[in-house]
Length: 358
Image (cartoon, rainbow, N blue to C red):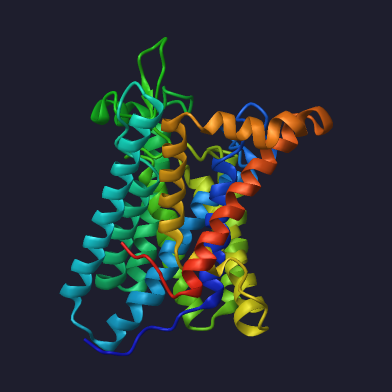
């Protein structure tokens, strides 16, 4: 295997880091009953700013795969060791997600164990797109992307409804996973998981779009990023007139809309940071992304299990801020403080060149 390392883009690290920081912000309000609307997911159909975060991260997984793997393929490196590395890392990410859910089960005394989740979806998408990056050409990757979008759109349409718990993705997930889904409807007994098995088809399309965008980035084809982003957003809006934007189902319209926005953000970060020399804000989060996400979750579960989570929020924020500013501002202040704490952690780690990889 060649000793030369693929180029690393500060813009990609920064964009990944900003995305992780946004994840922590929206996942950790002080009071879930008082959250500003842009910091909440759409209840079902629709797309809020918060609904852009997870597809942005998966898009960057694809971009990073293009930057790390495609140059090695072009150099003629042996593919089997690279494929083994991809699969092992994907398995570790999936396993870490399972461990996090085990801790959540203990910390919050949940009624059942959830199998799928954010890290599990990242692991599956990373494995599939990593193998596609190694063993297929760009034309084949575009064909797979088109097949995913068209095939998944047809599957959802065949279900006859996009309603919660009744759509075909939720029905299949519940049939396969049983009670081990995110949510069970007490009235019907049906289940739903926003990171379920079937909707991972849409998430895989997002990651694959990131793979192609990453190839444009490494080849300096900035114009392709702008045009591709515009075409994807326009197509996403057009498709949404037939099938809605829906993060829970990760619909093709949602894939295209969020993927187009991601292309533009990638292009903007590249121009500002790599070409114009702006500071790579967010980089510290970006180079320790999974560590920050998992570490913050473990901390949250430990606080909850110890019974400190609610008193911490109440005494440090709510008791003195709510009478002055109302209940929404202290909830946001807590979330910002949570992000700031972990920004300090990852800055300290980065200053000592400690970068956790799994």
